[in-house]
Image 1 (spheres, rainbow, N blue to C red):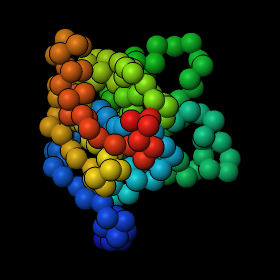
Image 2 (image 1 turned 120 degrees about the horizontal axis):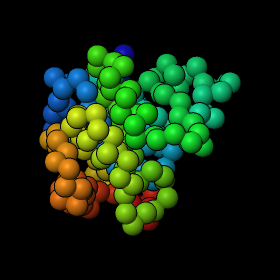
Image 3 (image 1 turned 180 degrees about the vertical axis):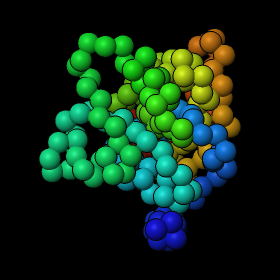
Length: 178
């Protein structure tokens, strides 16, 4: 399957820059910019190319019939966005439930243009004591660039500035939402 994924990925003109730290079993992967539904299949294709399982969260409504089985099969975890519980604590606890758990999140929290990222991914990584690995989804350059793991220091402003710098000038599928 990995060879087939690489063939499709390269046929589409995409490339991977950097090395995914597969020796790290638990991490929060932030992939940005998230501007389109195309990000989903490109993320799955990227994941297949590097041969590493990376889970993702989705609204629980996506996990109903007829596609729920598929989303679970490819590593999706349903999340009830309306249930009154601390989502950061709930998601951070997922890291304790697995030997290997790499969770992909969109720092924007939506496909729409945002001025500021949500901070949930940061606090999840901080609480779970896992690094954040940034990965670009650059449709302009047709590349996924993998950054070095950032271990949250607790200084949100400093760490977010470093992460945002990594994504400078990256273009999403819908550029005006980048």
